[in-house]
View 1 (cartoon, one colour):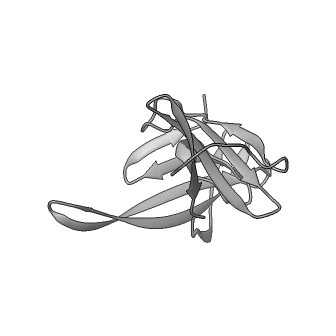
View 2: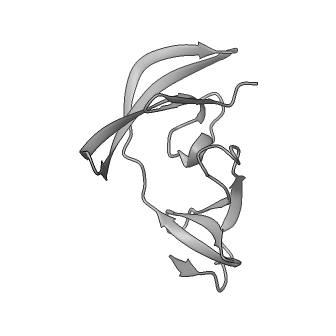
View 3: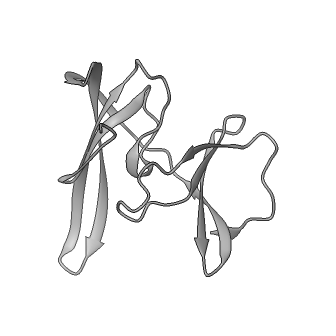
Length: 130
C-alpha cells in the first residue's frame, strides 16, 4: 500500500463501490487506461491509500443465462487461500452482459466485456438485480 499524494490527471474515478457493506468492499476504483492499471482507494486510520489490483484471469465460456431482459454469459476464475486447515482453491462464477459494455461488477470483480449482473463467489451470491 502507498499513501495517496496525488492522482495522475489521466486517472478518473469510474466506479463507486456498488456493494458497500457486502464483504467489506468499500471505496473507489480508479482505472488508468493509458497504463492499464486498476487502483482501489481505501481509508485506514484516517489515511487514504491506493492499492494496485491485479487483473483477474477470467475463463470465458459459451454458457448463457437470461437475467431480467439481458442475455448473460458465464465467466469463471479461481483463487487460492491458505488458512489453518491448508490451502484451498475457490471458484468465482460471473454472469456478465455485453449489452452493457462496461467492465465492472459487484465486490470489486471486473475485467469482463460487459457488466457483471450476478456473481457467485464460492457460494456467496451477489446480484445487481433489484
